[in-house]
Image 1 (tube, rainbow, N blue to C red):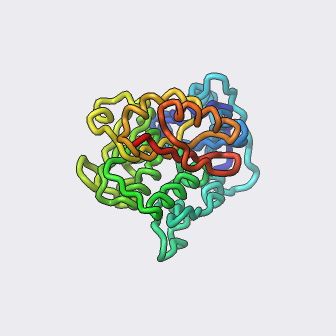
Image 2: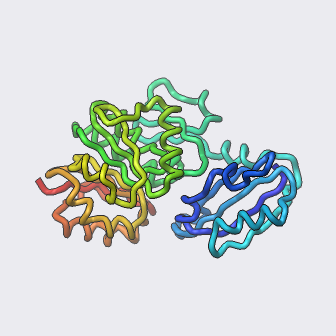
Image 3: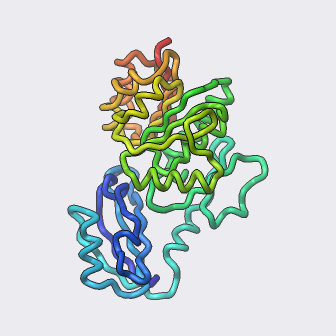
Length: 297
C-alpha cells in the first residue's frame, strides 16, 4: 500500500465504517480502511485512514468523504513499499489483563499456555484490548471472578468486537449472555470473532445472543432481563443517560462494569448511578476509569 487518505471524524462515524468492499463495490483491489483515536484526551476526535495500492481517484475520494460529515480527505504518498496496514497491526502488540491475553492474528504464536487467549483483529469495530478501557474491563471482570462472584445472566451493551462478552463467558461458562451494539457492523464483527474464538452463539446457558440495539431498547434485551452482570464500555454521556434503564434491567445485588470515560468524567457518571441506588465498589485509576458498581440488594 503506497497511498494513504486520512479524514478527521467523530467516534460515531468511525464506529459506523462500512466494509471496504461494500463501499468500493467496483474496485478490483479496494483500500484497507481503519480508524484510530490519536489523542485519548479527545475521546470524540478520531481519524479514518484508507490505504491504497495506487493513487486514489477523484471518485474514490468522493466515496471516502461520505464517511465523515466534516472531514476533508488528506492524501499522502508513502514513499516506500512498506505495507502500512500490516505494520500498524504489528504495532498492536498483545496485551495481558488479569488472566486474559488478547492478540491480533500476527501474534497467535505468542499465546501463553497459562492464559485465556482471544484473537481479535484490529479492524472495523472497537474493543481490541489495546485501549485502557477495554483492558481495564478485562481486569475488573477477572477480579470479580477471583472474589467469588457468580453470574447467571450477562449483558454486554456496546460490545464492539465482542471481547468483553467473550471474557465474561470464559469466567462464567454456564451463564446466559447477550451482546449488543448500536452499529450492525460491530455485531457482524462480533459474530465473526465468536467463530474465530470458539464462542457458541445461541439462547441457552454458555451461549451468546447477539442483537443490534440502541442502549436497552430492544425486545430481546427486555426479554432476557433482569441481568446480574451488566458491562458497558461506551462513553460518559450515554452511560449517564442510560443509568435509569440499566437500574431497571438488573437484579438486586447485580454488578455493573462501566467504562469509556475519562477520570474527569467519573464523578458525574458515579453520581447518576448512586442516584439509582447503586454503590461504587471500584473507581479504577489512571486517565481512563473503569467503574464497578453494585445494585442495591
